[in-house]
Image (cartoon, rainbow over all chains, first blue to last red; front, side, top):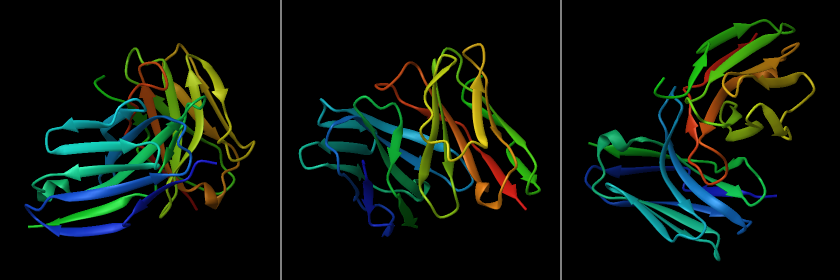
Length: 112
Length: 114
């Protein structure tokens, strides 16, 4: 059974700092990995999707990396802003399985 | 519409009543997914549709839960004889085809069973 873990569960950093969020998964036979953000009382917003053949994806101040062999992904946020405060979730899709298996999430707070 | 929509946004019901939750996916998206997020817990997969067929119902927690999709569009998740443990936010997502595509989520329906 695929298990997805995110550490830390919560993180607070001052505005302007760069930061890294971590995601680990137990089954490396993934089809893709997706990073989402969830704002309180709202649905999920897709940030980046990395296919299993890719090593990283970038969008603006966000960069996500994938190392399948070690079962790890990181989300790098540059020059953090208060608007980045949210819960960040990673999720994987296994080969032969259509569903997303979600991580436990990291609640990020950017301190102005 | 521009995104996935869900209705109602909030639903309060009494234990034992039936409820129906609706999802309108992005137009043209053939894949549709239902997830559940209980308070303080992660998201759980419930069911997946490809077109109007549901090849994966493995996440439905009991036979009180059912879902259907018509016209490769709207989907309805029905919970019969609701229990307090059914209280959660129910999220719907759609993607263009399957697997390799980004899943886009609706705002969710918050269900409270008293």
